Amino acid sequence: MTTTALKKAAIPTRRAYSDRMAEYGAIDSDFAVMDADIGYSTYSYLFGDKYPERYFNMGIAEVNMFACAAGFAANGRTVVAGSYGVFITMRAVEVIRSFICYPNLNVKILSSHGGLTAAIDGVTHQATEDIATMSTIPNMKVLVPADPVAAGKLFDVSFTSPGPVFTRLMRDPYYEIYDNSASFVLGGSNTLREGSDITLVSYGDMVFQAVEAAEELARSGISAEVIDAYSIKPYDAETILKSMRKTGALLVAENHQQKNGLGYELGILSLREFPVPFDTLGLRDTFAESGDYYKLLEKYGLSSNWIYKAATALVARKEHRNA
Image 1 (cartoon, rainbow, N blue to C red):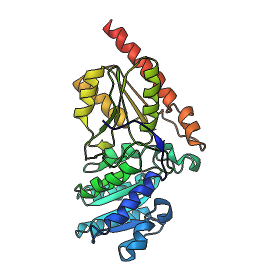
Image 2 (image 1 turned 90 degrees about the horizontal axis):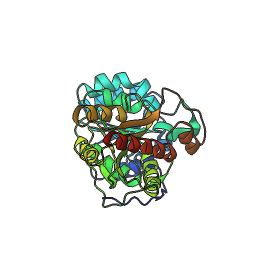
Image 3 (image 1 turned 90 degrees about the vertical axis):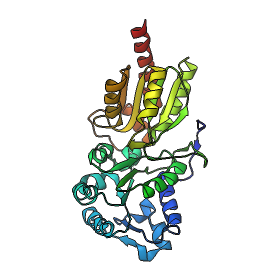
C-alpha cells in the first residue's frame, strides 16, 4: 500500500512525462516526437533540444499532425504526438479513430490540460469530455497519472504497450503522492489507503481530493478505501470489485463530465457484478468557467468537501439498507 502523505509537487505531470520522454530518447533511438506548436507548453521541446532530427513541430494543425504520425507509425516507427486535450479530442478525433486506432498503430498521445486543471484558460482549453471520447474508440488505451512520479512511469507503460495510448496530463503542479518504488501497469490501479466502509475511486488530480476526503471521513468514524484508477482503459475491475465487496459502497470522483466517464463504467460494473450503494461526482452536463482551480472544484461539486458529503450519504444508505 502506498503512503497517502501529500507534499507539494515541484513540476506538473506534463513536464514529468516529457522529462522521461527525453530520457527515453537514449534508450530507443528510433521513435519520433511531433508537437502542434506548443512544445514549450507540453515540454516536448526537451526532447527536441536533445534529438532535433527526430522532433517535428507540425504547427497549429492537429489533424495534419496525427495524419503524419499515422504515416510514420504505419511504416514501423513509433510516434509521440502532443497537444492540448481539447484540440486532440475534438479537432483530430476522426484521424485518431480511423487512421491510428483502426490499424492499431503505435502512436502515443501526450494530452495536456486535462479537465479543470486548465482552470484559468477557460472552457476552450478545459478538456472535460476527453476520457469519454478516447475510451470509446476501439484499440485506444487511456492512462491518467496523478503526480510526477506516476507520469514518468506511465510514459514507459504507454511506450511499451502495443497500439495507441492516450495519456491525460495536467497544466499545473499539485501534489506528490508516490515515491520511485511505486509500480504501474496497463490495466492496473494502486490502493492508496485501505478502508472498510466505502470505496473511493478517482484518478489524476482528483486522487488528492479523495485522499483529503478520506482523512476527514476518518475523523468522522468512517473508514474509506482510496483507489487511484490511473489506468482508465483498460481498468482494474478485479481490484475495484474486491474493494466493493469489502466495503459495500462505491463513490467515483473525476474531473470530467459525469456522463460517460469512469463513474458510468464502474456503475455498470457494479450493476452487473455486485450491486452496492453507488454515486459518481463529475461535471453535471455543464461547461465550467475560467477561474481559480480550487474554487472551480468547489463550485462544480468536485472538491474533497463534496466527496466527503457524498461518501457520508452513501454510508448512511448502506447502513439503512442493512438494518
